[in-house]
Amino acid sequence: MRKKIVAGNWKMNLDYNEGLALFSEIINMFKDEATGQQHAVVCSPFIHLHSLVQLAKGYHNVGVGAQNAHQAEAGAYTGEISAKMVKSVGAGYVILGHSERRQYFGESNELLAKKTDTALAHDLTPIFCIGETLQEREANQHFDIIKSQLVEGIFHLDATQFGKLVIAYEPVWAIGTGVTASSDQAQEIHAFIRKEIAAKYNQQVANDTSILYGGSCNPKNAPELFAQPDIDGGLIGGASLKSRDFIDIVKVFN
Ligand code: PGA
Image (cartoon, rainbow, N blue to C red; front, top):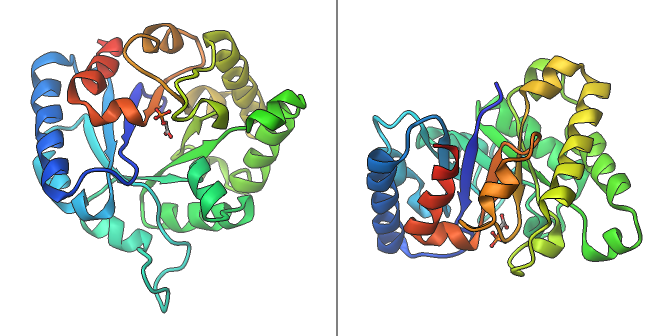
């Protein structure tokens, strides 16, 4: 089902107590200020997940997610965390294919296809990230790159499985740089993604998919971005580390 979603990606920030304090502020502000027509999701480091899920109890429009999960069910993968483990603490979401994982940890579309299958098998909602680098955009390859990330990463799913995904378009050149895609640039790619989904599945599946924008999104630029017809919310990095900023972005959907 297509939803308005503002998801925070804390990345590798905040120790345990800092994370709990920030999340408590977010919950309180959400309760007091958000109309509840939107979903707020916080994707924290693994160490916070269980406690955040406890704090979010009773808030049906507040979700908690991980930032990664392994493709295997279990086994000798020292240091890794499985989708089953993430699910077992009550988290509902998992970010997959973030460009930092693709870039620094060599995650390929093929690997991400497996991670997606495993996450779905454990009833997690993947927030599946796609996006081109600056070099690829300058070489005018952005549509091809986006298409191959879709085809190789998630188009093996059947329509029912696909309906459980959230997609995040995050141009790599806009992440953490302070440079945001213009609302026209973002809308152009979001419309393209939806068109590709319609061609692969059907128009109904495409209409029902939530597609988030990510990359230097903040309370100032979010209203214009989120007003675009194919942008259903945001995946927020830096601004999700400040409760006021994050909630102000959430409130764009009030
Ligand atoms: P940013 O990060 O908002 O700090 O650019 C977005 C993301 O990486 O998801």
